[in-house]
Image (cartoon, rainbow, N blue to C red; front, side):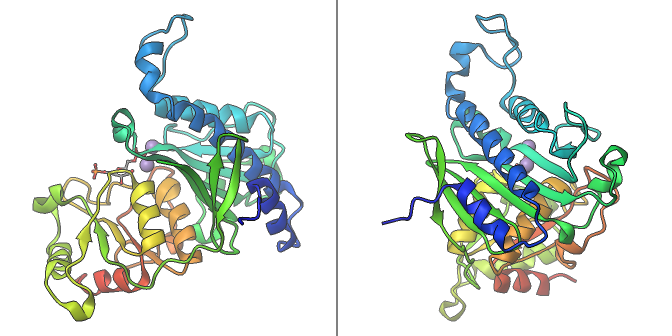
Length: 330
Ligand code: AHG
Ligand code: MN
Ligand code: MN
């Protein structure tokens, strides 16, 4: 029988292993879990939007119906900002940093991708929310600025994601392993369902958008062709799985093993995915689960950020698979 451990209870347990934690991080994580429940409520009803009015129109109440990613963005900013626990936020949807609605009292920064996989929303395919938490670099929250957001991924104090799929799950780490919680709508709680997730050393899935084949560098093409060769001893050929929502592709590979690659292409010379909102939080999770995350050469969490929305190539998943992919880089 699964012990009924709510995510809030788990945060408190984790806090005990962080002697320096003042409970503030636990409060922040509770804020994020709360915001995730609000976003979930809309995501699972997205199909009803056309009854309530399509995005960009006004609904019967005369309210403007928002695209789900903008809705999710607003929900997270307001639901979390009102508690005044974050000094500063950065969202994939906002050009600059966001000073939360309430005064800046918190000593932490929240960076997030409110809705990952937005192209999949209208076709009922899994989408997600990704978040990353850093401590302020200085002591005075009122002095917080964009430099507090531009910290290496190795400085993260917590990271996680929510996947809105056949069931809704929240997966997080504070540096003590990776833990997954499944949402139980009958009680409105995330319950512990996957304790101490570890990613298999090697997988049998690879995820890449093969539509970009003509734009790929030869090293990437050589690696993918390698995965397609018949060789029982090395578990080849791999199967391809590409959902188009990073969170969903990453989550599957985290549980079953495999590699996700969004490489540099001619169209996206620095890759398409964002370092601060997508690559760093998932890299923290991946490494905590025993996996590996690089840009094909450098550890993602060692990259020194220079701007809020900078992009990076991303090779992430089972350690042996990422190392093999890197061995083709020349
Ligand atoms: P977002 O919806 O937050 O912009 O993220 C979409 C990303 C990621 O979720 C996914 O892996 C990737 O875009 C898919 O890109 P392609 O359609 O170019 O393959
Ligand atoms: Mn995204
Ligand atoms: Mn997004």
